[in-house]
Structures are given as structure tokens and as C-alpha cells.
Length: 281
Image 1: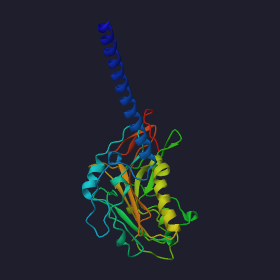
Image 2 (image 1 turned 30 degrees about the horizontal axis):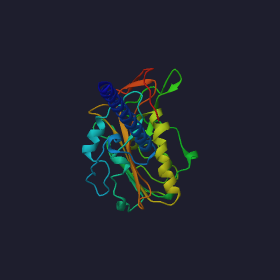
Image 3 (image 1 turned 60 degrees about the horizontal axis):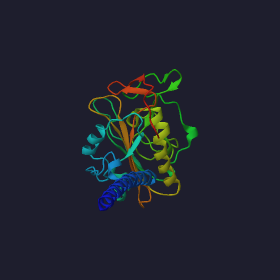
């Protein structure tokens, strides 16, 4: 009888151990999922979800994207089914907000391959919000540009580094001219070949943040840097970051230059149909 009681006790102990282990596994999955949901809804992410978790500051008076971090972003490769953009530096800009002195845009020169492979940096205020009705047809063909449609689908955009909508009055030398009320247009130093999805679905989200800050009277430093890998003609993505002088606006993101349903050859910019290519916003 005593043996039966001991056997039953061992069985109960084993069952209890299994139950505890199962509960631990379920709790781990639950808490991990919960943390993931919190991260995705937060304005800043954990370091694991940043393309560059701890960014350096460029050696300029206004800071921004450092060369070392440019190279890290250039090695980013998009995987089908993933999100079309990622945070950089946990969504904090490396621009120096105290560097805002004069309303202007610093346009970098094209590189030896005629690419916009360096940062354009804008020092903006409310008067730079542009009237969209003054837009004209774009004709500049950046490196990697090809026929714009396949089977009726728009694939390519002439992507602005510094958006038309926040560059009213800025001439192609980057100076403010009150006689020039349109935004930046057909400026080779401010355009790159960008996927329609990247430009129209994602980049506009962050450009709207800049516009909103300007309309509310904020002064903003905004920087855009297309990211090229090696000597490829089409950018792999673009780094956008902005900070207002009062710190209320502050973001830093990397947007992949990808298009759902298509795959790019970044060496040439040519696209081919790939029904398996999926991109989430």
C-alpha cells in the first residue's frame, strides 16, 4: 500500500513539473508577443528593430548620417514579407538642432557616376510649405531610371530627397528667394530613382510629419540620403531624419527601395516581375 502511495506521489510530481514547464513556455510566448505589440505601436523601437541601433554623428556642424552608418545601411537587404522601412538609432535623429541658423538647403554635388549618393540637408521654416498647384512635369532621369510602367503598373518615381512640398522659395543653389514660390523641381542634385511604393506609400508619411511641424511654426532640420551599395546605379534605400529646434519633432528611419510584385537589379535599376515579392507598410 505504501509503495502505491509513493508511486502515485511520483506521478503527481511529474505531472506538476510538466504543467509548470508548459505554463512557462506559454508565458514566454505571451510576454514576447506583448512586447512586440508594444514596440510596434511606440514612437521609438528597441535596438533589435533598428537598422543601425547606435548611430554615429557625421563630422559636420549640423551632424546627420555618418559615413560609417551609411555603409551599414548599404549592406541592408530587404526580405520579402518584411516591413518597407526600419528605424535608425532607435528613431532619434543625429542632426544637431542648434545648428539651424539660416533658411536654406545644402545640396550635395553628384558623385562621379552622377548619383545623388550624399546627404541633402534642409533648414526649414513655415514659409517653405509649397503650393502643390505650382508643380510642373518632371523630366530629369536619375541614374537607374527606366520605362515607368509594366502592364499598367507604375514602378518608378523621380524621388525627391528634400520634398517639393517643403521647399517653397528654395532655388537650385539652396538659397531662399521669395520670388520663387514653387518647391524644388527638376533639380538633378535632389532626385533619385525610387520605387513608386517607397515614395508614395512610405516616404510621404515622414514628409507629412515635417510639413505638420512647419505649419505649426516649428523650425526644422531635415536630411535625406539615398543609400547606394558600391557602384550600383539604383539606391537600395533612403535615410530620412529630422529634428525641430524645440525637439518636438525627432525621427530617423531607413526606407527600403522596393516594390511589391517586382524585383530590382540595383546595378542597372531594371525591374522584373516577382509575384512572391511582398512588402508591408
